[in-house]
Length: 210
Length: 359
Image (cartoon, rainbow over all chains, first blue to last red; front, side):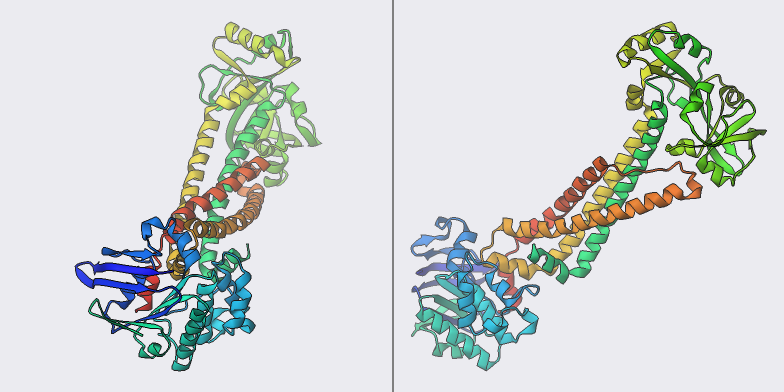
């Protein structure tokens, strides 16, 4: 799914956090949005992922604006996956049940458990596995409906370097299989894995490079 | 089914609080309805025994205040279609050491409706006691009533608590105690289809009296209306308290589980799915609370029935119809109490997950 942001501005109260952003995310690409805290990367990610409406400007998904996409819940369920800094696994469900929670059909659950290396842990609860394994389960949950694009906000923020690099590796691997990834991060190591780097500063795109 | 149970188990402290709150409310509804229903049912049964038609003093609010001429009973018994007329005086007086006891003066033909366990029906200067009061008074040979001694001639058993805990005496003796001729006539008919004609005849020939079918009398009896209205009001308050308890507890539950509902919203689960999930959780609690409240209420009613201080006068019954009614009330309580917090949960903005993450 091609995502275009055109003249996107956003305010929190009177504070302007995005100053007119124009970017295009190509289908299936692994795009990293990097920048310091307060640069606007998380706000941009939230707007691109439909979670937040921009104060000004428009976002298009395969040429359609949000209001033309129909039911937003349905659109998200079929097209978008989310990975957050915290895993947000539901503690009373096993990893498998968490992954299957929003599944339109559960046929991909087993293969995702295998490919993410958590098949043997599938019947464990989130407090019975490591931080890296939890985040893998969260990634599997995001991928269960074979979305066009997965948005991740600081997905490695709570992980050590080894696990963080493992997550980037997974994103690159799935992106090669056709799933787009848009990842907001202040971790510069992501640049080694992403196809496109969007660098943000003071609410503006400072530069875009490969 | 498994997921809601897991969620309830995970949040077991708050689940327990909701369960207790619901159980108490449901038990309160059960008890107040059962006890008020029992009072009405006992008194109705008493009046319905050999009474197709009831005659009272006209315009009187309560049968206890009614005073009619007992000699009219003979006249009514001669009306075609009337099988039998019994006269009753309904009163209450202290019987040492009990502060208040139901006293029933009955015409001789009424005695046969009491099943004797011991002794004989009372003659003048005698009384027979219900088995409950006989036990409470520790098998007395005489009782003192209105400063007069009466010999206990016999003991009867009645399934009607008011009678089983009361004293039955000849009509004339009761007349002296309560200074009245009779409170009511109970008329048994040969043919029920003649009741309207007979009622019209009595009301015409005795304008100081009022005849009604016993069912009609029970439906319009003020005391029953007061009891029923009071019970409905207290029941409604218990219902509202139950709802408020659920609303406040479920609001806390939703707040605790904000991230859970936020993640559900972010992965595209619909609002109705989230609302249904929360409703199913409280419905499970409601069904369990209903079962426990039913058991507790049966136990409490049993205790009350056998508590000496109540003399068997409080005799609640949980009918199948009442159980169904309270079950519907319990489910409604769960649904109404959960709806608002569930709608709030369904509207949790997934953005809160990003903000909470601190990125």
